[in-house]
Length: 258
Image (cartoon, rainbow, N blue to C red; front, top):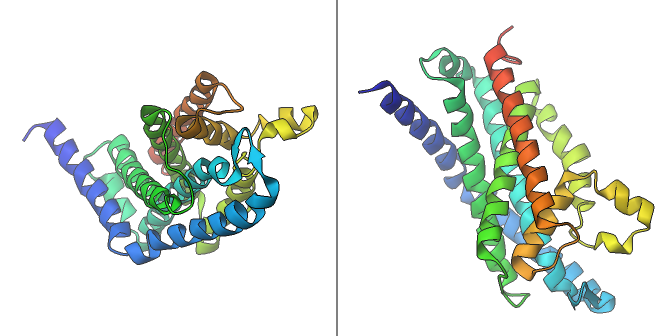
């Protein structure tokens, strides 16, 4: 067996474990996001949305649909990697992986694959739920897939960084609660930034999730507050930065070697 074949087997082993990890408990990983988003559609889309009327020339429930799907992709891709990597540290089998004759990039991509698959799976499940509340239509299917994939990739990397620095189970939830959730809700899921004063529109542009939500909305509805090219460049920029940071952390053994 060639060296590259060994790396491929190692990658498939890690990715398979990460995928089966959440697939075996689908009642806990897939169903809850579907229920939560269903409640968002009922409360915000139907009840409150009827009073709001239209947003950017479409029914409010149609406007928030892409954002709710994106929110599910973000939270689940992140949660899958952070919980899995911290679990590997807690159970002390991450050391065996790091001393194995495989590059750290194989380990990284293996974990990220699990996060991407979970994020995309939940995204598809939530999209199916939206069929009960919205008229399903996709303006640009390729853009929908690319943005969903890149976003899941990005937040899988972010989840691994959180997992590296986490020292207790409480540390796993701090970033999602105090950073990820506020940025997500302020990322244009429930409103267009055009409704904000000019100053706050400029402040909103600092939020990277705004670019993901709007480009994803463009893929579904053909409407966006942000240029598509700009949004993709911002996402790719953060992916490169976080990927490089993850590699540095694994090479140094940060949070693992004491």
